[in-house]
Length: 222
Ligand SMILES: Nc1ncnc2c1ncn2[C@@H]1O[C@H](COP(=O)(O)OP(=O)(O)OP(=O)(O)O)[C@@H](O)[C@H]1O
Image (tube, rainbow, N blue to C red):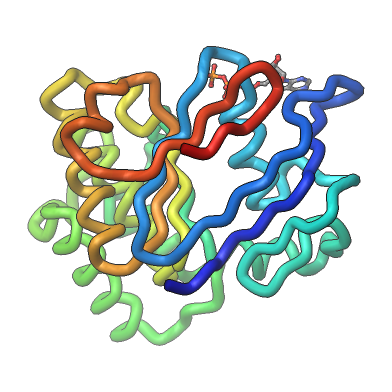
């Protein structure tokens, strides 16, 4: 199994506050990880370190897909982020354009310029999330669960090895949340590494995965 993220003895700080100490874990392709812990325990902060939104200053090792987070340069950060699909709980679709407009926007921003390639990649990701016939819809015409599927489709555009989902079911009713968790779990079966922060521990009994818990400023890996 190939390891794509490796942290050893990493300190995670927000401002001058130490959020997590001695963080040690690794993540592998094709695995599904739950990230749990109380409100404010550091789940989002940990995820943000992985895409260099929260910088890391000290630790023995913090490597992610060929990048060293302890010494990454600003100019490298966009290239790291292209390898990571990010899904938040608030959907953050651009409201002024259609589903395909939202997806096209990301592809163009990440260097795609052949119209046929763009159109076929959009068709591919929309069918992966069960939304093949919704490309012309405006975000406000979609339900919360459908919008979250589009956000997942957007996260998949550049075929990321790693998908980080921060409470992706937080704003959804239980049944829709369950379907979104099922979809993310399928993506791990298809070879992506998926990390999902959640307060819903019921999901962990429905979809197998490894548990990582933020507790008392430590990351406990079970
Ligand atoms: N931008 C920031 N500046 C300073 N401190 C912050 C910032 N963002 C978060 N924190 C602090 O860092 C700690 C960890 O917050 P974080 O958002 O990582 O927790 P969390 O486990 O994701 O919580 P939640 O379940 O609410 O999403 C909290 O004490 C929080 O107040």
